[in-house]
Image (cartoon, rainbow, N blue to C red; front, top):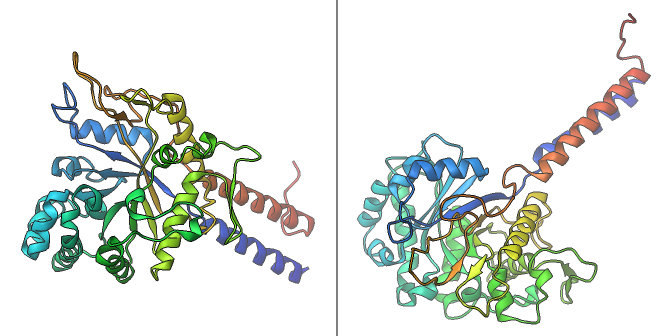
Length: 388
């Protein structure tokens, strides 16, 4: 009896340890500055912070770092990913004192009371300002060293790429490599830096944009729709892909492996689906598809399933973006609307961003183990309840 009890107890504790170790991707949201150019009455940073909390997001990515916005998240549980604008990259690359100056404005007054976890030096710089490419690695190193000079070691430094501008192909993922000359100029030395500093590779992943480029991709495949024949097989690895998001993530993972770094964490800094477009040919940019994509994305990320090549999945994913830009009276609509909220901050969709399917499963597992323990104890006389 004692042996069987010991075996059962060992099994229960092992199962509990598995439950305790389960993790899931952090789902965040990108905030783009609200100014008088985008809103008749821009909302205060405190209103933005309150809205983020009410929606249940655990992380916020500031597309443009704003000290007032960082201050609004003081003493909150929301983690922050800050972005250094592309035009500041050459200045920071030129001198470490410029990096220190930027940190004294955007980080030092708030950290650690504000949970700043990552700084992205530039955003899709290779596409928007390719002439700045040679400045990127020196700027990243200067920010990293300036943080160390200030005694800050818990903020990682990286830069953000666009999937379409960085990776050669999405399918099959096993054939993906990084584009030249960016690989040798920026990406290969960056990957070495990320490995040395235990930092993440940041990438913007938009299945919508890839779907627009490749008309043969089924719309349901891009929208996380579960159909019996909604898959594509990578014949090289034997892996089956059931959605376009996973395929794009694994293309990044494969490209990093080809470059000699297969274990660097991946953070999806932007992803989303437009609810409207000023281009009448973009019929897929509609609210119904946008809701399907974001719901499918959040469900997939919360499940903890990960991707075929990265079982732990991406460590963070940021929905783009918090709210739409306001179209002022008499103005002509332009561009795409990516927001999950309207300009007046009312909800477009009914989506639960907080919580975790895996956490719920873990709670059920804990309840099951406790129940089995009680049954075992009762049968073997370890528990005696007085009869009333």
